[in-house]
Amino acid sequence: MQEKMEKSNMFHTLFLVPEKLINKIVTSKYNPLYYHGALPQFIMYVLFLSGLLLFAYYVPTVDNAYFSKNLINAFTSVDYITNTIPFGAVVRAIHRYAGDAMVIAILLHMVRVWFTDRFRQYRWVQWLSGVVLLLMVMFIGQTGYYLIWDERSLLLTRMTVSALETLPVIGEPLKHWFLNGRNITNLTLSNYLFIHIGLSFSLLFALWIHYVRMTRPVITPPPALNYLLVALILVAVYLFPITETKMADLNLQPTNMEIDWFFLWPYYILSATGSAGFWFWITVLLAVLCLIPLPMFYGSKPVEAAEVVTNKCTGCRLCSLDCPYQAIEMVPAPAGSRFKLLATVKSYRCSSCGVCVGACAFDAIDLPEMPDAQVNLKIKELLEAK
Amino acid sequence: MAEERTVITLICERAADINSLINDKSEVTDAPGVKVLKFPCSGMIQPLMVEQAMKSGAAGVIVCGCQIGDCYYREGNKMIRERLLGERPPGLKKTVDRKRVLALWLSKPQKDRFLSEAKEFLSVVRRLDIEESKKG
Image (cartoon, rainbow over all chains, first blue to last red; front, side, top):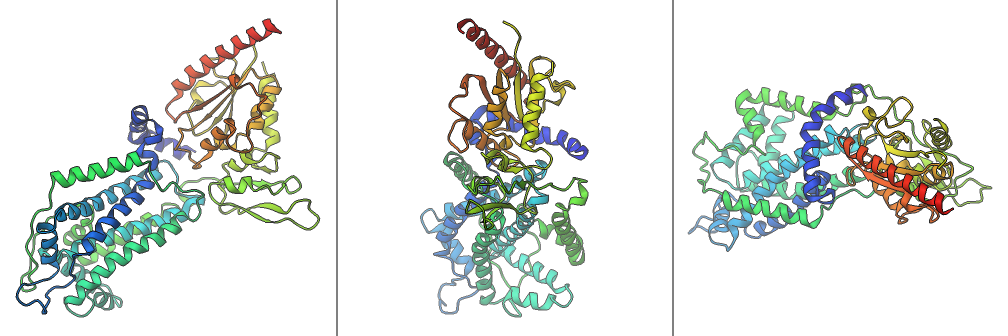
């Protein structure tokens, strides 16, 4: 409780003030802060669609021998998309800026979930799967930068290889997996494309785990917010068209590159600290992210799960339908009962929020800390006290 | 008019932070007659509790949860709102006078809003009390 109070001051200025303001302007129904989890999901669909259009023209090769007159490879196909195909440049820029928007939305989601204290105890599965999702999104975004096959892609590839090489035992196999062979070849780019697209669709699986303990997850923002988001991305597309770059040349070693701060910051760590430092800091970062929900940091008392009053439960299922964390399961009632079903609480999922108490018309489920009878007694006491 | 009846507030402990407003008798200091009972989530409030409070002699009931869309336990405030409106079982009984039930959805820093709404509601239900005692 004490710890919560300290956090609340920062929380107040960081979130509650803008939250209040936005509520005043657009009402709580359209407050993007109330859809922080749904926004990345919508952006994912924008990325799927724009990515599908790009995929139609993309050629995942370094050098295609069959087209000897004109070099057709990843870079020239991206160039063709950008300069020849109607609106190709727009679709490409949408794909890039939607990716950036994805990182922003995920960070907003993460920070807000942390500040509002909605990540631990009965929610640890959501937090950990969220960390995995973040990792996946980062890697998908980075492979997107390899796919362009300009000088930056080559530099990124070589930096990744050098980082992988320093890992003991698994370093070499990982490098071979990453390059799809011992050297950079046509197969390398098809591997990148496979990772980029394959991992993108794997997001759906990870999202299933992200949602599996939640009843009715909020996954669709109101259409008005979606339109606004797309409009913002289009503004970015118009203001910052993607600049032309140079094709990768395997005989040269590019040294400088523009850093995309959304996806490529790990490479900044890599160039600043070297391979060993890079793996150290990435491990630290991941460990911190994974350990954040550990209960011992918060001194919070364990959740006292709701309890079903067995002889009152009629098996009407209302509590199990309303439970926000899928913590109530309806099981066949014991022999001799007048009813078919009986509610049972999975205590490891229970948040002790009392929503099931509100759903029960028969006083058949109670929070041990605050049983119904006690609530009614307190109401009476309050009314009688002068 | 024999005595001024009490208004019961059933409030989520994560909604408007009114700790500084209430005295040790769970009464709102600046609005005497409004008494407060806290819940872990507004979703825990049963319509039955609202009815019970009325039956036990409350002049009115204020139900207060977080901003709709921002329930800490995800959907609790939406559920009690739907129950009060009779859109979700178990609903509030038709016999309960709707004029005497006030639902508020306030986020943590909105204690001033709570106080002004509570004061207004108190005067409204007391006026209702007077009107009804004249009639009956």
